Each structure stands twice: as structure tokens, then as C-alpha cells.
Amino acid sequence: MTKTPDFLAPARLGRLELPHRLVMAPLTRNRAEADGTPTDLMVTYYAQRASAGLIIGEAATPNAVGQTYPNITALHTDRHTAGWRGVTEAVRARGGRMFLQLQHGGRVGHPATTGLMPVAPSAVPLPETIFTPGGHRAAVVPREMTAADIRSTVADFAAAARRAVEAGFEGVEVHSANGHLLHQFLAGNTNRRTDGYGGSVERRVRFTTEVTEAVADAIGADRVGVRLSPGSTVNGVEEDDTEVLYPALLARLKGLDLAYLHLVHADPGTRWYRGIRADWPGVLIGNPVLSGLTTGAVTRAAHDMLAAGADLVALGRPFLANPDLVDRLRRGAPLNPVRDRYLMYVGGADGYTDYPALETDGGQPSSDSMVALDGARVA
Image 1 (cartoon, one colour):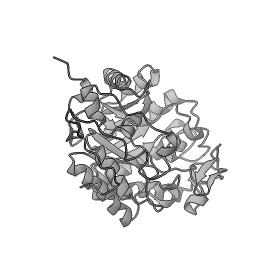
Image 2 (tube, helix red, strand yellow):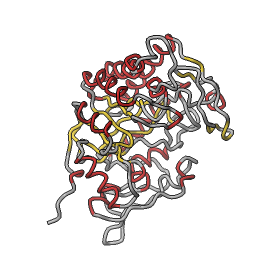
Image 3 (cartoon, helix red, strand yellow):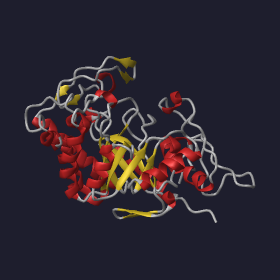
Image 4 (tube, one colour):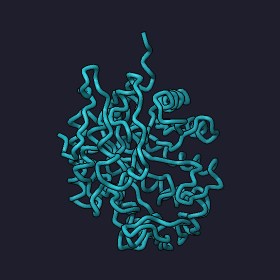
């Protein structure tokens, strides 16, 4: 008898019972309306992938100035809430569960997209061009956030979390990774403040801590996760003190009794990963670095992540190209390859909702992995 892979074992996450340990990572796909409202095409996309143990919905901005690129999702108006409710209802109708990632871009933004000057911990521009509705443009120098800006942004995250629950999400993920606003406060090269939010690591972790505390107070700590990317240089951040920065942050977070901690590009071989796993008392989601997009590579990565102490495994591109990823891994079936990367962010159904599901022996899509390919609302 073939042994069931460990990643298909059930798990508990806060108040949720998960059918297995494979999580769909948050994947920005630029398919929202211009104002950030989810579309019917997004409803189809997420419903197709409802067999994930948990879906973490793509980054949604908690206020207008936090928008990064065109057609990014948002959650700060009633229209946004209603749009996301269509997504969660479709996923729940197919047996799925969703959290939503809340992300503020900070300096990763442009007035050509938002009509607003981006804000950041310090007036340090993104060291690269940024995509706008008119194409790539040089980054602008962001406005350094005042104490009032910081307070209002913390409140915006909490308000977005309440909207997320209203929209039907089981919880939210606070995005403090990948060079966006919260990570900009953590990193020394983007945070040059001399007040209570800059300088020492204890001060640089303060903003992420305050956002997380406010979100937990708003909806309950067992509905809140935090995403981190120790050592990442995405969007021009540089950490010269990773191995002291994150222990200081965890010291502030681990007493909150959060639903989970989510590590981006978690490599079990690194010292910082082992240190975080040893120091974090709760559920840890590992987002592994994949050696390839094959059934064998994904299966090995998931197994190795769990063997190294992760409780759940977050996968991005495999879910992107395989709406029925769990079924494929269970059956040892081949995976769809990710098509042209250009299709990831250009809008429309191509490379988004048109990836095929497995067929049964009878030549028809399997009943638990049927996919809608016409962009219609799935219910």
C-alpha cells in the first residue's frame, strides 16, 4: 500500500480544521478593477482552487495610498467588501477556506497609478522603475510618514481586517515582507528615522508590531497571521542585521497568540530559518524554494518543509498553473507548466483561469476538480 504523503494529513489553524497542509500562497495577479474591486474572473480563479487546505488571497491594500501597481486589489470601501464577498462565497460553496493578505506598498507606488504621493518610513526612493498605467516610470521620492500618518495607517489595517471578516474571510495575513511598507520599517536602508520608529531594532520592529496588535484587537488574534521574508532584497530593501532583527520582532509577536507565522522562501538549511522555528511557539507556514515545477520537486519540497518543522506548506506557482494541484499531487500526476510569465499580470483569462484540470479515466474532468473557463461567476 502506498503511504499517504505527510502534507495530505489534516491540520488545525486557529479555529479552522484544514483537510490537509497545502496552502495556496498569496499571488498578485492584477485582475481587479481599476479601483481595486475583485472581478467575476477572480471569483472563477479562486473557486477553481478551493481544494487548497487554505487559500491566502492576494495582497489587498488597506487604503488608497498603499496601492502598488495597476489593477491591484483593495479593501477600504463598501464596493471592495462586496466584491470580495463574491469570492469567499464561491470558495466556501466548493468547500474551501480563505484568509486575505493585507499589504501597503509604501514607497512601492506612484502618483501615476494612485494620484497620490507614496509614503514610507523615510524619503528614500525605490532604486528601480515602477510599472504604472502608462508603462514603466522612474520611482518618485516618497513622503516620510509623520506620527499622524503612522497612527492612521495602523487604523486602516484594523479597519480592513474588520471588512475582511465582513466579506467572509476566515482571517487576514499582515504582510511585513518583500520590501513593502512594513518591511521598509524593518530594514535599515529604508528606515532612517530617528524617532521611536527608527534606529535600533527594537524601534524598527515597532510599526509591524503595532499593526499586528491592532488587527488582532479588531478581529481576534486567532484570525491573524504575519508574513516575513528575512534576508530578502526584493524591492531594494537591505538588512544588515537579519539575525538580530527577527528575534526582536518575534519577541514582540509571539505573545499575541496569532494564528500563524508565514516565512517566504523558507530554506530549512539556513540558520535564520532554524532559529525562527525554534523561537516561534505557534503554527509556522513555510513557503519553500522549489527546485522545479514537477510533481516530484513539489512533493519533495513539501515533505522537506514539514520535516524541518513547518506545520503547513505554502505554494505559489504550482497552484497558479494547477487549479487541481492537490488532486494531482495525491495521484502523482504530472503538473501543468506555468505558461509565459507575461500572462501572469496582463489581465484576462489567458494564463489565469484557462489552466486545465486532470481528466478521469472516462475522459472527463474529475468531479472534485472541475474548472470554469468562461469567466462566469461560480456558485
